Length: 35
Image (cartoon, rainbow, N blue to C red; front, side):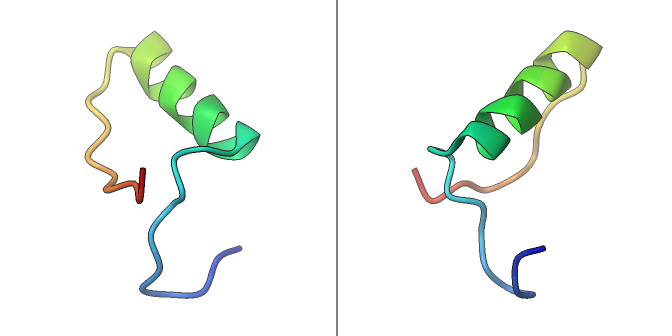
């Protein structure tokens, strides 16, 4: 897990998986990514 208060990078494979999961579910991703 990432330390509290830090944002997701938006460029790694885990962030890509997260973004694809939100898109596949049709749910908006309100996560603020660094990239």
